[in-house]
Length: 236
Ligand code: CA
Image (cartoon, rainbow, N blue to C red):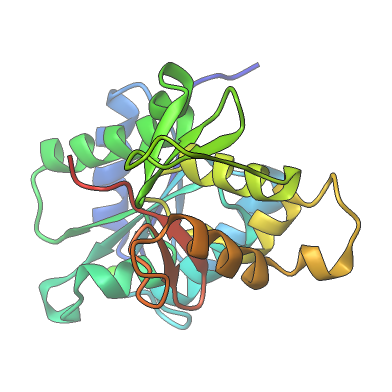
């Protein structure tokens, strides 16, 4: 069984692709190359990679479209967009496609490696949730052991339904990652069969009323257009 992270480099320029494959291969990652979204789809028929390095400027379907498709396939796979300066991309556009991060060409291999490592860390462990059973969310604190929301202002506690808790726990374990709506539904819908309760957007609205400082302008559980939602921990 192969335990090394599997990184797929999607880049249409052969020399550039080979350079990245050689570099990442030397860092002891398992690597595969793809020259298009079509080639990436072929790889996914066999296995889901750990991380995909995705060039924005691809012939045919561009990197953003491929990223959106990939994020729908998996909420877990890491996605780093590789952009050319001429792409005029900003971080928001990249994140709206469901990417975890982006890097602009030209870049130093070491910078790329730092970003790859950082995304892999976020994927492989969820340090916040495992080491600390209390997670700050907006104006409340989620206690993962006791399954309550604590109001630090007065110490009062709110009990959570199983469905509310499941969803908040997934957010707590995946901070700063855009999470696909369908994936959220899939990983949290196993307990309750109530169709009304399964509607993810309604559940989010209810949770926002509980955790946001201003539910009309959510800051902790943000909407990521075209993807789903992202939990943003408060700045320390
Ligand atoms: Ca390209």
